Amino acid sequence: MNLSLRTTLAAAVAAIAMATTPAAPATAAETTGPLDYVALGDSYAAAPLVLPVDPSNLLCLRSLADYPHIAAKALGARLTDVSCSGATAEHLTTSQNLGARPQLNALSEETDVVSITIGGNDTGLVTAALECINLMPKPLGSSCAARNTKGGVDSVKAGIDAWSPKFATALNQIKQRAPHAEVFVIGYGNYIRPGGCFPTQPIWDVDATYIQGAVNHLSAALRTTARQHGATFVDTYSLGIGHDVCAAPADRHIEGLIPAHIATPLHPNANGSKAIGSALASAVLSATSAG
Image (cartoon, rainbow, N blue to C red; front, side, top):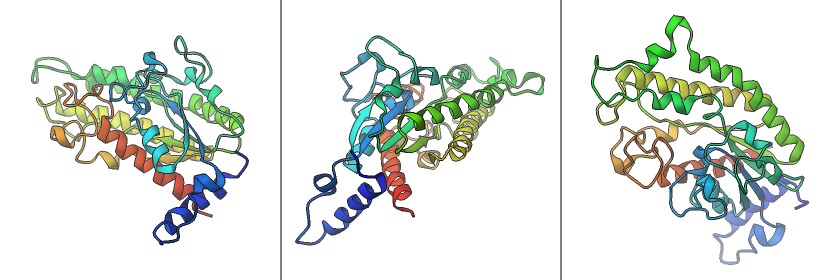
């Protein structure tokens, strides 16, 4: 679509406001056309196993109720969701699996909004989290925090720092493919509270604090890089307060190691995807209406 994103979003806001009057005009989508929204990223975006499943590429384990779909519905946007479980930054420019084109191929000069969550697989953070599992109480086992900080160097955080320039390159590539788009970087969330909740979740207290600190470090790297490249960072940590894997099953936004809902462990469930999608939609409206 040829209209600017700001003009389109302004029309959307106006339509929503005027819809409360008896003589409401046509909707923004009818007068200006829907936003062209492309969602990129890994399983945090794709919400694997959350029903209903997207049948367009079953190898990506993508949900039709993931946060991009929630945001698109709230914005009345036309969505192209190419997020894929297991994706790394490499898969933005190369095919990940049979039937999946490079994710950046979905972008064009017509794209209005781009969202992306990436980095968890690139930096080894997913693997590091799984290695923190201890089925037995201390001292039967070993601490992942101790292993990963042996010698005074935090190997996980060092890996995140080393990867950050690749994310900067990815943002540059997005801007080249979609020069008129507003880009939104969605951070990784609040997985487990300080001290954890052993044995409800089989992660020792020191390791729970450590692994959430590593998640926060990745989100901080995403935030800094996003700001340096003109993108908007959407922080999902606060959304998870009281909704982490230690919360009562009905309150969780992130599934525990033994899922209480149909969702992949340590990933957003349906409620988590709704919260993130709503936050993204609000960020899009806020960013594009300011100024």
